[in-house]
Image: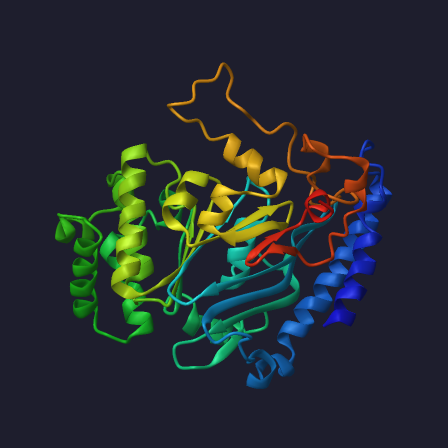
Length: 395
């Protein structure tokens, strides 16, 4: 796979990364990029359809640590666009222990959602592709899958049943022309083979368990007739109806008011205790991380910049980006004249800068930061606390 990755890197370096970003692309350059992208996509799609990928020996593997339910190792997920190769996820590695809550935090565009969609194999193909790396998943029957290589025929048995996802926006995630009961019961009939009547009864019971009092009436309603809080609870019920071993919560409190946010987070924690489900919680809100997570992964520009248990990271963050995220949280007992904000924007994923990717936005940066090797693993400065920062490494 390393050879394949090197070959693809050759295509990428021939794309928009060589171009002057202050200039518009010429028609000739756009055609060249498009031609190279189509050739690469055809090769990746051909590999997916080959007979080798249908062999269980190809996509089955072994966990590095049996106590983990998921292990990301050097994951690269790219999108082939008209302006070059967008490296949305670039060498991500972290573990999700069984029964724990791992929070992934960072600004919009840092690769959080793409990481979770890679696990679910919901990346929009053919433009979006998992280029290299492993996503090892320990299934309930003891079989370990590399989800980055698992064919769709096998993913249908894993996705929705053993691994479920609460999507970011419940209004767009629910089908507007189907009733709530139809949408929830379909999951049970597909994965468990129970009858429609039995599925509706279990759906009603699940709606009650997530705090919806009028569960029978809600089953007959359409999504547009429900409030945002109820729709989010319906999404949680759909995700948990098959009692999955892993739940991915992608911004579960987006567009909800503060009171409903607290109720939804408390509900997810309660369901975790009842079912023993491991949770991958994706958010940009440090307060959600503080309330939910056992371990925290901080992402920036497609990479992990810091990782530690929640208490350690929140009490003594090491990376300047993590400290900036925490400083941006307002506190009622700390009045300020102006709320803090991180200057600048996340760099273009099609043309990442050399050295530390946070360099241009960091208040503590020096010329030495340009020498940071982004391909190197994170440094463990203290046991269990990892960071990608040259200044911290040389202290």
